[in-house]
Image 1 (cartoon, rainbow, N blue to C red):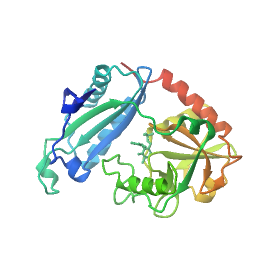
Image 2 (image 1 turned 120 degrees about the vertical axis):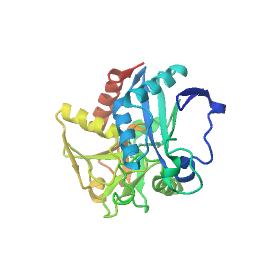
Image 3 (image 1 turned 180 degrees about the vertical axis):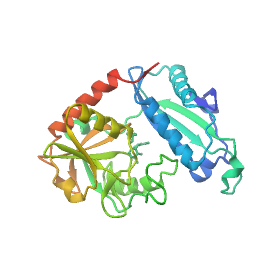
Length: 287
Ligand code: PXG
């Protein structure tokens, strides 16, 4: 396996980062998870844009342009001869000293690209639907560490994931500080009620799969809303599903012990899953 490290394709065993790297010491960096399907990288430009936006707010100077980042992803995929892959880009502030001060890392950002396979949830859950719960850990406050940033600091999500796992679940709903539904630990959430598709407007990552689903819905004249969503609205929804690059679209059939709709993946969910798979076969950056 070849790993892209700051412009070079390196063997996996030689792909090493300093213990003084601020990504390692402080979670000081940004990342993206991207997928390729049959030799097409899905929404590559959107992922690169989000990575650069996170880096911009974190004031990390990424030494590559958008075009160069796209090229780096493609050359890593080619080197590993992968057609269907999960791609991880990691940008850290780089090597500093043991102090927090980001000025010590100036001009030393590390860029790593890993391409591999990923299986997030068991395949049967895509047919049967998944059961999730709400966990006590609240999603980060946008005023503190904005969930719009895809930073290397994922402890908020990991703490929530631990709570889900401790109760025997794969994924969990995180609420915002006001108690509204924000998103899941690594996925966005949608509900459908009377043929209207809704997804939280606040305290969540602006997922690229989420945007792709909203785009598909618009194209097929399905009404959508980005709004505040309560747990009650989730419980009484006709359908519920999660979206994410790794998860794709996965139906949810039970939340906090409440059956959603008839307890089976809904008609609209199945339709969107089908349309999504068709789009991933057609759209993307070819390599
Ligand atoms: N919300 C959060 C908090 C995420 O981390 C999504 C939504 C979905 O966004 P995209 O752009 O992928 O549609 C994510 C991304 C994992 C894992 O192992 C999940 C993500 C990232 C890295 C690892 O579950 N999800």
